Picture (cartoon, rainbow, N blue to C red):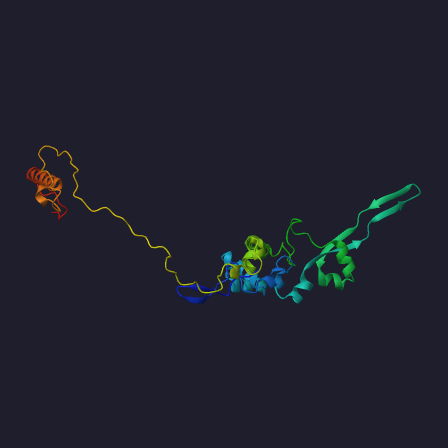
Length: 279
């Protein structure tokens, strides 16, 4: 599959512009290398992703100001890691023997504290993992690695950007087909080899050839017209042997004279009614 390199336009070869829709509006040319991280990024990951910058601009956010405000609230990832709230399993669950008669189910207990506090009290990453984290929203919420309860407005902005990116990338992928990117293939049309060479479009057009047949037209000689027509009473008969009649004898000239007379009669009765200066 290929597109031609050049095309013949107005008597000269010009570079052929390959058709294509290009990157989505606001995206860089190398946007596809950032696409895989759109659905798998934390808050800190997206700060250097140009696709999220394009999404922020599309949502009416000033990207640099938004980043500065968010960073002032959340802080660096290393600092946030020790201050984030975690859910720690402080006692195990399971079954406990109750005398000789049997067992009773015991629910595990949890405590919410910062990660630093959990480490200071001797809890391990396994204890934190067993706690399942701190649920701050619906199960379908995107995990940006930040506390939605504390930074809800930032998380909502990130959700909006992510939603816009998903729709934009999907819309682009539906239009970005191979036939547009790579060109037409002769085999698709039952043609062997290059489609453009087959039709001679890889060479300048040939000059026109003179016609092999000469036609001698047998035209009848012109004769004066004998057509007649009825003339309404009161109007002159047009002499068809001349090019035209005098303007004053035309129907339009007589009609215009009648209109002028009617206007003069109107002015005599009502005064000057033109759109001039008013008193």
